Length: 383
Image (cartoon, rainbow, N blue to C red; front, top):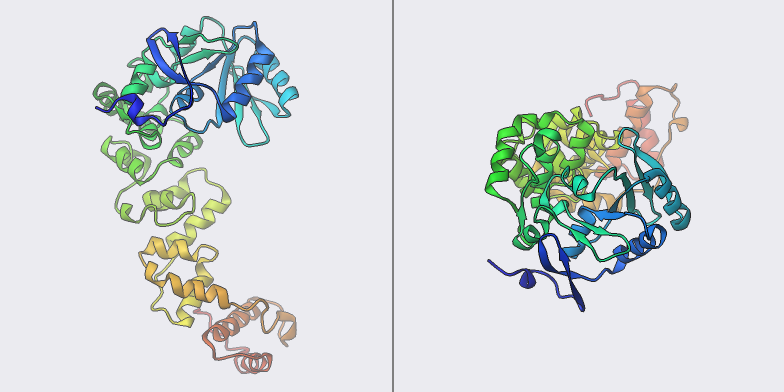
């Protein structure tokens, strides 16, 4: 096994501080972490305030820190105070649990959660040991009651205790997602993987919104891992077309590949719904002719390239790109220029003229008007 120092990037400075698990090299704060931590320390010096969980983990792994969690006695007061100083926007995150969030202008967030007792009690409620670590704001003390720093060094994903998944079944997805996201090859330890398999039938019980949030962060390898653990099929997913995953940059492309029509049952946005339907309803162009590509684009734009990837027809991408580049900025005719009452017939006629123009059989307004005169009243509706 490679040592921690070999897999970690080199930091110009290191300090070693004592935690409950012993001594481990921890990089000095820098960048986004530094600015957030410094303000937390300035505002809450003298209070029992702890930076906990993923932000501490990601600092050790030298990953970008987007979300910071702070546990302390009065979350609402702390959030409002932090927002006044940082210029962020405070709002309640969970009325039931008393958590508050501050959204910062750069997209990062700082969450303030209640700390009714010792920090060790808070950490005992968390999912994996690498997330059950804390650093005191305004001091060097680090608390690690479950060996999280050692597990970071060994690249292990290990639950804090065996009821973790039953307490919150969303964690069944979070484990494979962390395997997928974290660098250096983190893996569930055998005992934790056995617990995932034991509780896999619970994976559908969290809200669909929470499930979707985890699924959106997975790569093709992450979906494959879900399948290995028995978590994909209960959610409606399949690896049948997984070879097409990653073929397009759209953030929801892989979800369409893996979940197909079942994606439409999840609480996706209207835009994502249109995107998914565009791909799922797409039909492979007959060839790369101007007419065939025009018809394909009419049904799939603005996602024609993603639809080609989904259909396994990426050899037609150049034809779509050329059609986009050569597409006229203005139509030859508008509906008001036709001697026809408003209605579906006008739209179909204008689309046929656009298709003939794309195919090169009509090039001028006069030719378009003549086409309209010949075809008004006998407009093809089969596309």
